[in-house]
Image 1 (tube, rainbow, N blue to C red):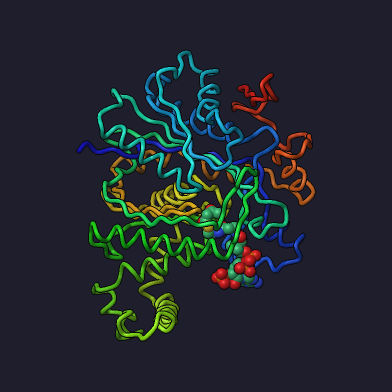
Image 2: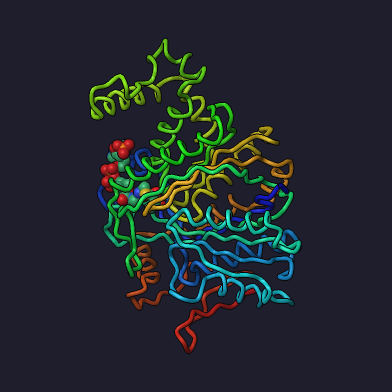
Length: 444
Ligand code: CAA
């Protein structure tokens, strides 16, 4: 099969920043360490008054197309993954294409456009759709543009409020990609769950604690499914990017994943002297005692040097951006991959042909785990990104400004505030059309 995968990637954060330790914790009268250490989050990104899921997606896509010298006719497919759509019929990809057509001489009239929904996992599902489209030979030498874009807002006062975020990740999917190839093996863990949902409402109904358990259960199932197709070993993977609603969630998932992957390997044997072997269900009379033993083993495992070395190498780098921007829902696992590669480049690590284990998740609920192989062009591509500049340039909002901007993006409110930043060379929201559609313009 032809190698297909991510050829180029772009990152676009909302231009406002809410500091969790300084501003959020202070207002809630909480210990800042609950956010910075417990959840592992330092700040959230928010869209300014003229930004939304379309502007963030279109701005990411434009930068990617300009860098790669692409024209609309080079793109045969635009898939947008989001769980913040504002229209039940017209897909966000049509708005994004409409924006881009304002600045290019040609159009996307022969591109297949769509919108994918399955909570946060739909970004990965869209990548998969695009890979399959190319692998099936239907692309006529054109690439696919996949954009994961979200404004992850919770109801004011909801337990998820500290984990909010907003941004877009655009990915060019093509043959012989520069960044990673997507390998064919996939493991799924999927079940009908009501942990996080938005039944005809903008803000989610969330059972926060339950959602964490569901994340772990589905992730374990996906790993078991993957292991039916291939062997795994902790040393196989240079990075393990997870869907990251907040880094503390990944801390739990990583421990589960490592324990699972290390079972029946030399790693388990080497650790046995220090912490014993992993509990096996057949050695216990009931499920509860087995679960307790497993938890006790996992707690000891995460204290070992072996685990901590692995965590510092394969997991921690993937959390560096997420800790500064919060949850981007569909984009989150793609931010994690990008963060890990950025860290590797900045630290001179040789990742050519190394494998990644990519662990995606969407509430409702489904986990999907697949492997990717890093391609020799990865460093040059990652060097083009402007992540640090974008993060540093965000406008730091006060609590009052946060309240205003939350209202601006609340579909039930009609608050109108002046923007906190000045748009430059970017698409902006420009009011409403005669059929209630959102309108956009490009500001030089
Ligand atoms: N110092 C250090 N740590 C502290 C602390 C302090 N002073 N105070 C609290 N902590 C720790 C807690 O011990 C806890 O860590 P552990 O879970 O490891 O024990 C952590 O900080 C968070 O504290 P709480 O559990 O008390 O926090 P909370 O109840 O206010 O909210 C939450 C946590 C339920 C996850 C909430 O943020 C939430 O509802 N989030 C939205 C749902 C979500 O993100 N779920 C994740 C899985 S679902 C998913 O992934 C899909 C998606 O994108 C939404």
